[in-house]
Structures are given as structure tokens and as C-alpha cells.
Amino acid sequence: MQIFTNIAEIQEWCKAQKREGKTIGLVPTMGYLHQGHLALVRAARQACDIVVVSIFVNPIQFGVGEDFEDYPRDLTKDSQVLEQERADAVFAPSIKEMYPTGYNSFVEVLGEISSKLCAKSRPTHFRGVTTVVSKLFNICLPDKAFFGQKDAQQVMIIEKIVRELNFPLSIVRVPIVREEDGLALSSRNVYLDADKRKQALVLSKSLQAARELIKSGERNVDRVKALLTDTIKTSPDANIDYAEIYDAADLSELDVIKGQVLIALAVKFGTTRLIDNLLVEV
Ligand code: AMP
Image (tube, rainbow, N blue to C red; front, side, top):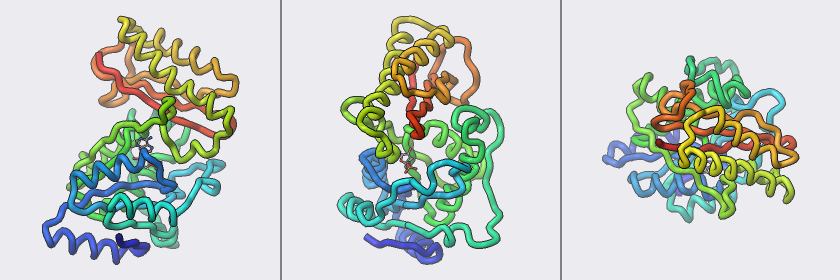
């Protein structure tokens, strides 16, 4: 497995792979890899000849006062894990390599999809994500890029830039990987102490409860949302950022549950903000 830190070098290497007729699968990550990330790597391994994993804690997707400095990092361990997963290349650039002095180009999606959920609570976040992902697409030249359904709004926004900016690649969505007790895997789970880790189970529990209510025939969005918030509030330290239900195609508003809906949560436990979501089809 090759480890690259230089943009020109990995881009040349990817071009050479493509000249040999090989397909490239890209898995963008911020590192501190867990089984959720590895599900993406395995999907890429299955689907493509060459697997490239990027590891970059992207400063421009963190807002002021967020956890950029504290975000967990372990490139040595990540590289070992990726070697075992038979990744072909890791791209782990420095901030200077990605954003040299004077850097001023950004990719931004406007409209409804970029005005709610995480976009509302983290106003500069998706501009950072779409910019870095666009750069990674141009650097690594993937045929397919793999993203987790864990970050549902993120993958929707990335599908939109691929469509609207005509990136010549396809996006593959990978389902959420959870712990046995239901907690969605996240690099940020390391911030939780034992008590908050236990309290954090209300995210998946409330999603399941909402699904059951819908399955039992409830179609009123407000009543399902009320169940979500009531369930989350059973955890004394849970501070709800949002608990929403939108059309899963474009995040448009719904009064009545119909078609495929996205139930999306962001909840803070102390300073740790966790997200989770569920797609429900009626
Ligand atoms: P991150 O390192 O948090 O930026 O995540 C990198 C990629 O892994 C994103 O596409 C995430 O959606 C995906 N991912 C993170 N956690 C999970 C999970 N529990 N299940 C599936 N995909 C995940």
C-alpha cells in the first residue's frame, strides 16, 4: 500500500492506474477509522480495481469553536488497518498542501438542501465538505466514490454536486454501521464517557420508536416528531439540536408521511454533538 502526502504524486499515480484500464474507488475520510469507515473501504474493494482512502481532517468544514483541534487522529494505526483491508493507496495531505497560502476557491450548493438540518446549525460546514470533496475528486480521479448514509445530508449534497457540476463518477451510499446496542459508529464517540455513551442510545432508540409508530399507521409528521423528542428527552443530558422528518429525495417539508422520508437527529451530550438518521418508506 502506498502512502501519499503530495497532490501531484497521487494524481500522477491515479492517472497511471487509469491508463492501465483500472477503475478507482475513492473513500474520503477524516481518519481515526472504525468499522463504519471500513464498510466503505470494503464496498470500494468489491466494486473497484484500485482503492484510494483519503485521510484529512479538513479545517474548512469546522466552524469557530468546533472540535477541529481536538478531533481524534491516528495515522499510524489507520494505515495499518487499511493495509489489512487491502487498500492500494492512502492520501494524507497536510493542510498547506490542500490549502496553500492565498487559497480562495470554494464549491457551494445553495437552496433548500443547504438550509436545514446540519446546514442550519453549522452554516459553513457543507461549503467545506463540498470544496474538499471536489478537490479529492480532481486529485484521485475516481470512477466511484463511497459515502456513508450516516451523514445523510452530506451524501445528498455530494450527489447534487456530482450531478450539477458533471463530475464523471458515481456515488455509492453505504448503510449506517452500528454497535450491537444501536449506537451509530462515529470517530466522535471517543468523546463520550460511560454515562453519556449510555445516554446516547436514545438516538437510535427514538428512531426505532418513530419507525414503529409509522409502521403502526401514523402519518402525521408532528406526532411522529413529538415521539422523537419525547424519547430523546428521557436522557437527562440530551440537548436536541434538531429532530426532523423530511422528504428523503430533496429534504422538502412534509405534513404527512409519504414515499421515502428521512428522519434525522442531531443531539448534544455535553460538548459532544452526535447525529443519526433513518430512512423509512411507506
Ligand atoms: P468521517 O471520517 O466522519 O468524515 O466519515 C468518512 C465517511 O465515513 C463518511 O462518508 C461517513 O458518512 C462514513 N461513516 C462514518 N461513520 C459511519 C457509520 N457508522 N456507518 C457508515 N458510514 C459511516
